[in-house]
Length: 397
Image (tube, one colour):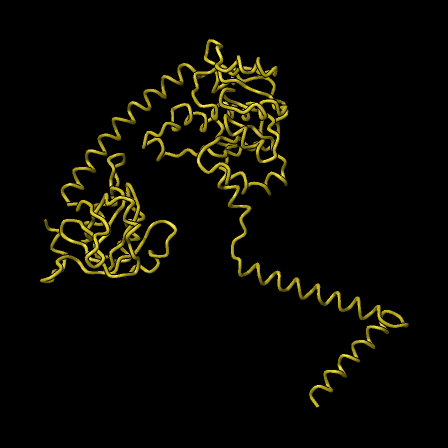
């Protein structure tokens, strides 16, 4: 219980007495966090970078809504905080936000209970140094085991799909309209609608080809766009999108069997199949765009990174990794395009608008002054200017 020595005690209310700060993402509490405060965060598997930011702020304790280490990743953050003699309390739950009064005095007990006065705000588990070290070792071994299995599956996928990845064997031939164009591959992932809204200027400027993946095709139609291609199971796609005139590509098993073919026949529209041992229609959409010579492929709603692989998220499959390695030179995440179209520094932009307004006002004045009177433009302008000057002189006499 070495960590408990950090608590100050009083006869009536034992525990650490300090100001509690809401340091959740998007809050202002972190900027106001001072030495000796209690930081309340929501950071599962806290990163080394975030831990260092907290250490620099020198709080006495950090209370985490989640666990500092879930066991999914071997993260150094908890050990860094403990080495800095900061008390850690984890797994207090999201209900802490309901009772927390950021910027007010709070009390954190030896048992991991957070109070405002006599009101219990949250209860969690105090993290001990030995426990943190043991959890790190377990997570490290678990990660190695998972990665061995993951890359074993990756090798199997390469054995079965090398012709697809190398020569595009099985990719539908009807994709000539994608050549030398920018292509948006729109999947129905978290936040994809917001990304599409933020991409409106990019779409207006470059008129990219649009590939709707599964329910992403419905999103395109609902937002007023006409997809060029639809890739996915028709049973999960609305009739309006399927009848929009887009070329429909059905994911199929290596033997050619395609789920959803009956719906296509019922709607009376044509479709081609894309046979591959790939579970994700997003991967097929990316390969379709790459094989047919797309200049740039913008990935909307289906982010992929190493953290997703480590955490064994379903979308981070071996096929997803290899597909993105295949199209890597052309692939851009939608977030990067959105950043390019986001104007930063509103104050500087305000000055620009103010200067523009003054220039317009001056131009209007010159136009009116030069058009008022019976003389030439310059004579009328000079007469008007002299009259204004005389008027100002009269004001100060």
